[in-house]
Length: 105
Image (cartoon, rainbow, N blue to C red; front, side):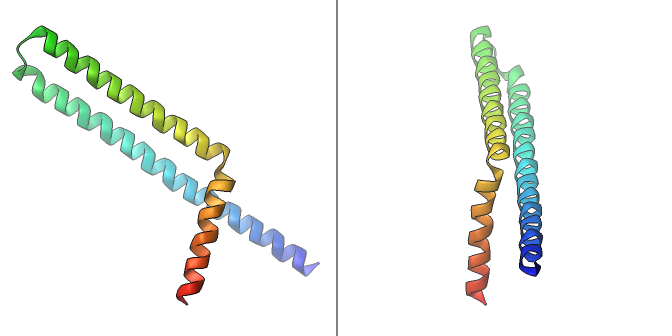
């Protein structure tokens, strides 16, 4: 009975650690996407007055839109995949981190 209770407590602890790691990754990915948007838009608007020809402006604007769209879509897809398989992905990470910590002691 006590072994079963200890096993359940370990499972809850593992789930909590998985959720914390997943939330940190989500926060980091969101910060990256925001930083990417700010950087690309800053570069676009900073260079805009220096570009004289209309065709180059169009190419630059389309390229910026494509970079932002594809990178944002990739990060969203990654986060969905991580949400779906977070027990497997983060469970392995936690197992390896715990093994490394125990070897250091």
